[in-house]
Length: 218
Length: 225
Image 1 (spheres, rainbow over the protein chains, first blue to last red):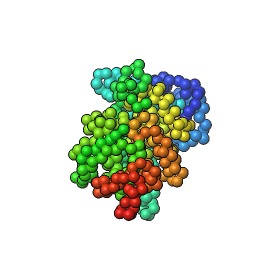
Image 2: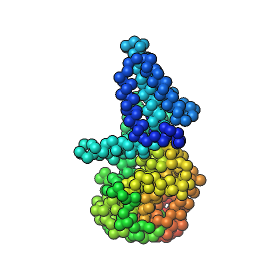
Image 3: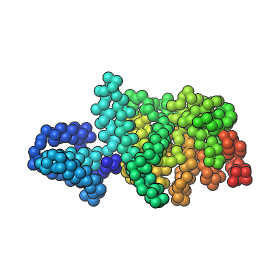
Image 4: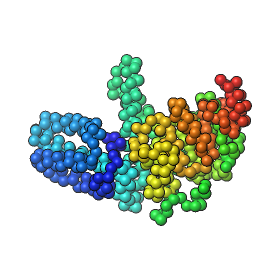
């Protein structure tokens, strides 16, 4: 999904802390996998649609994303119906709809920075025992999201460039130049991150800005 | 403010890009011009420690770019040629706050300063916008604001007006003219540097002209046009 989903607002879902929303999403996600009744899961999907409606975001703004979700769900339901039957297909379709809509409501109402800060807090225990660097993981997640629209644009550019020369766009014709471009972009972004003084300076919690010794450019 | 390059040479991919450069940069507005592949962008990158010299030293206010890279990057902000490559975070406000977080500002202070900086440079109201939806001019301004918000003493800009339309080019020119900091600008836009204090012409890895804008640009037009 695009990282552009956040829509500013001041409704109850916007005001809820990111950690609480993530915890609720995780809990409800687990619960949805413990239920197999298509009727209960269908009700859950309707409730999730209600949660999305409660974000206060206009339907017109969500149309593109919802269309994408509908296509994915249709493919999953059709495949399941063919492989395991309609009852299971209905259950899995309703489960996916409920989960994706809840995740969509989360991203509509939560700033990326708040999600990343929550992710950093969740990873802090792993950092203390040396299993993860929370800041680096958060930055990596941000970069993945940042690259999504760029990758889509690059794919469009390659398609257009080939179409302009009357060529078809097969998977290889698309993937090879994409890999080259992505590697180039990755180098450039790494340089930009370096230029902006990454990794962060060591700070203590009482500090609200760089120390005076290091900030003498007034 | 002074930057001293002492007999600096750089080789990239076995190709000599800069050869024996000696410079003392002390003026508030310095332009760097030259043909494509002349080495001017590499010269700019030396000033922020993005490229380190293979021979010689680069010192920014006495700080060696090799030994004190972090402090050098606090002192020298770098605006890249392609703003797409400078935007790290997907949301405008978060991208501006990123550098501030790196230099020790709390999250709240970084966000407040980011909002103030965006407003100061005419990008107010864009803090929550996905960066990829901005226009080319807005992206270039965002790249500049993301650097300026860190309050560097020197700003290096690598071809900041390339690929911009007339209105956005003027906007960036005005922003550069209004900078309180020292600005070193690599550019093909000769008009941009015509009002500067000093212009360097780089050719095949050497400084071939170093003068006030009028004689330096005349040399460039007459010998490399």
